[in-house]
Every structure is written in C-alpha cells, then in structure tokens.
Amino acid sequence: MAPLLIRERWVRELTGISLSDSELTFSRGRLRFRNRGELLFTHDGLSGPCAIDLAGDLAETCVRNEGETELIFRPDAAKDASAWRSVIDGWRVKEGRRQLRTVLGWTFPRALADAFCLLADCGDEKLCELPSAVRDRLASVLGGVSLTAYGSGPIERAMAMKGGIRLKEIDPATLESRLVHGLYFAGEIMDLTGPCGGYNIQWALSSGRLAGSSAAG
Image 1 (cartoon, rainbow, N blue to C red):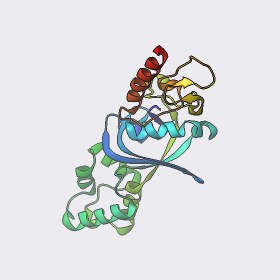
Image 2: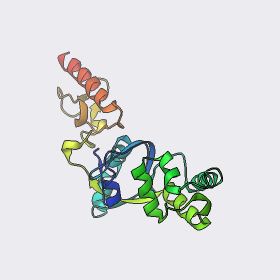
Image 3: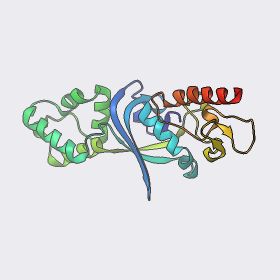
Image 4: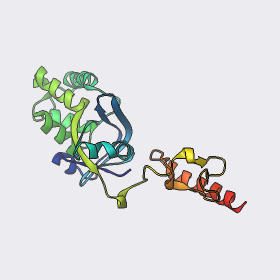
C-alpha cells in the first residue's frame, strides 16, 4: 500500500494540492474497487488515504495489465456529471458575468480549476456565454476523468504490505502457528491489512502484545 504512480502530466504538475473528499474507481468486468477520502497530488501521482488504500487493491492488477490500469478520478465524491451540470447551470444564473475559471476557482484550488478547464477546453468565457455543449463537457470532466496508474511507489514509501501467513494457519486466540508448535506471529507477517487511518499500527501493537504474552505463557 503506497502512493499511486500516475501517467498524466497534469496530475504531476499539481504537487502539494489536496482534496478532502475525492473518489477513485477501478472497474474491469466484475472486478470493481472504489475508494473515497482525502487525496494528495504528488510529483509522481497521487497519495493520501484514498489513493493508498486503492493501491493495495490494484497491486496485482497493475502487474497483470502490463503495468497500466485505468482509473476514474472524481474530485468531489458526492457529485457525478449530472450533479455538476446542475451546479454549473446555477453558477450561470447567479454569476453569469464572471469568468468560468474564476468561479470554478472558488470550489477547487486555482491550479486544479485551471487543469479542469484545460481538460474541458474552456475557462476564459463568461458563464452567461457558455454554450450547453461546453457545460456538458466540463460537467463530464468534473464528474469523472480518466487517469492511468502504472504502479505504486517503492517499498520505502509504503504504509503497509499485503500478503503473508494465511490466517487459517494461525490460532486467533494466541496467534500461534497451527502447523509449528511454539511459533507465533504478529503484525504484517500475517495476511491481514487494514485501510489507512492507524488500523495497521494498532494491529501491529495489539498482535505483538498477544503473540508475546502467549509465547511467554
């Protein structure tokens, strides 16, 4: 579980910008992962709980897909394209004489607002002059723009590791191996990983205490 590496240059140019409630989605056939939460733009992609949790789910998928995976990025998890079209129409009524780029900058950090305008090929127009097709185009971008993930950061930047000793091989009451008497496990060596937010640290501490006290008798 580490930051996602993103191919698109415009993402990497937004280093340091954060969003409090974004959404990243991966979908392929019946396989679907969706994460919502804080997101941070970095020099090589996306970090924060939303991206790091998804990276754990995507690790094997990226490898199988020759290193690249398509994601859908929604900057405001609560709004799809239809909701954004209503918001833009409302801006047009209330702030019609203002530039689209200016009003969008009230909702997102200015550099991010500029990036969305570039993706939608708009921004300098006054809202009252914005054609319906352009409003649709911008709403589509804000409602979910495609990104290309080509892996996750190195182990030095990882928050936790997936995989490990299978849980069915461990006694949950003592964390002793069911296969080797006197062998106890704790932390990430077991195949158990929680989301970002302190859960993995708590698991490391709690399992260490249980394994240690069990081993001591």
